[in-house]
Length: 197
Image 1 (cartoon, rainbow, N blue to C red):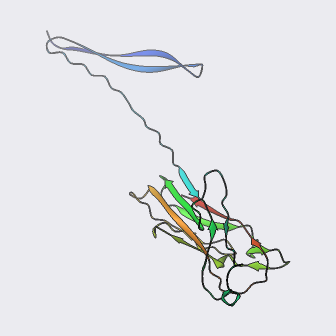
Image 2: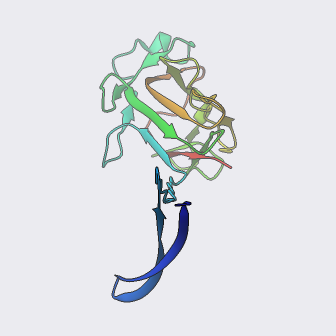
C-alpha cells in the first residue's frame, strides 16, 4: 500500500491570565509500510538587556573619610597622598562590580557640589574633587576621575565578545593633599552612573 500522509492542524483553546486563546498543535499521520511521522515545535528564549552596577555596600551609601588631624602640619598640602577610612571593605576601599549584556558600558561621574567641589563648614570654602583619587585593583575597570563639573567618563572594555561585561574588583580612594585649604569639615556626594547604548 502506498504511504498516505495527512497534516492535521488541531485548534486547542487554552486560558492565559483568564483570557482564552487559540493555538495550533501539529499532528502528522502516516499509514503504510515503514511509516514515519514528524511534528514541528518552535522555541523562543527572551533575554532582557540588563545592567548590574555596585560601588560599595549593598543597600546603603558608604562614606570615605580623610582625616588630616594626625598629619604633621608641615606635611599638609605637600602632595603626599592620605589614605582614607570607611568603605564596605574599610581602609577607604569599596567593592566595585559591573555585570551587563547590553554592549559597551560607559561610567559617568556627577556630584552635588554645583561645580564648586566639596563644601566646607566655613562659608565659601571648597575642596576640588580632583583632590580625591581612586585606584582600581583591575586596570581594565577603573572609575572616571572625579571633577567639580562631573563630566568625566570611563569605558571598561567588554570581557566576552562585544556585549558581555563582567568585573568584580576593588577601588581604593586617597586624598591627594596637593594644596592648603581653610580648616573645617568638607562634605560632598558623588554619583557614578553606568549606561549602555
